[in-house]
Image (cartoon, rainbow, N blue to C red; front, top):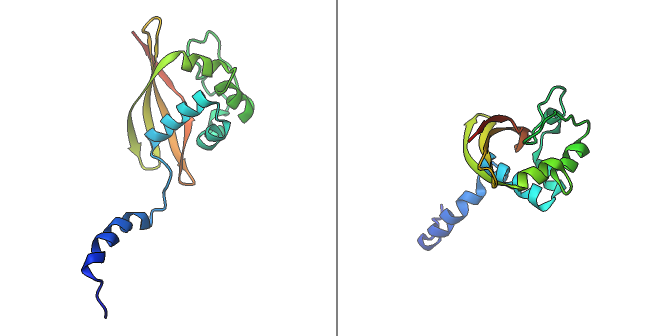
Length: 152
């Protein structure tokens, strides 16, 4: 058996992480939340389509995720949600008018919750959320934009 020349050993260790059997090139749950907020900013419907779990977001009785609403809206199709999160959409307008802070994530198997806060630039009122994500075919997808509480 031939031995690997010693000078090639560092090259081997540099290449080893790229040969991972995990095959997961998708970002972690927290990074997906950052990517979704960036997609809202950039009107990137393709990225939003990739990272949103429409089956969950369109289920009957799902609570509206726009901030500062007097009445609850319902969405019937994925395009309704994409329209709301892109140019001209009420939620996009409200989210972009506020400072957005992505906090910690908590993982449990193929589920995760990521803290997201929106802070009004005018009133300093904070809307604290925990967005729910789950892995679907090895991709983190948002299934809930749950507004948990309003703070001061």
